[in-house]
Length: 143
Image (cartoon, rainbow, N blue to C red; front, side, top):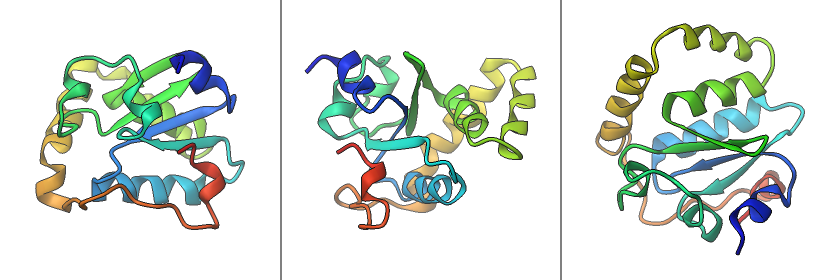
């Protein structure tokens, strides 16, 4: 599978998330409820498409330690806090106002992101297998 072709086949903006993380699954549900134009698509990081992503070493950690959300947009992959801000920006008003957080240095934004990511299983729990989308939103999921 060619990664670029697999990403662009739906010609959209794709949110890759940790499918066994309760915080991540809750975040995806929150995004779906606010994505009125249905521009975002979703895929588990554990899926074939997610495993094919060219990610950094931390994102490849078997527990998904630091990269609970990856965002693909316009041919680019975004990780950590930048992914979160880009996703919010894609939702439009008022969520796109979060772009003001780009004024903070990336090391500071990623420090907060990594702290939450490293503790997400402890604080929010995890499931034994990836979540299955409901029939109402199944068309938004790539895998």
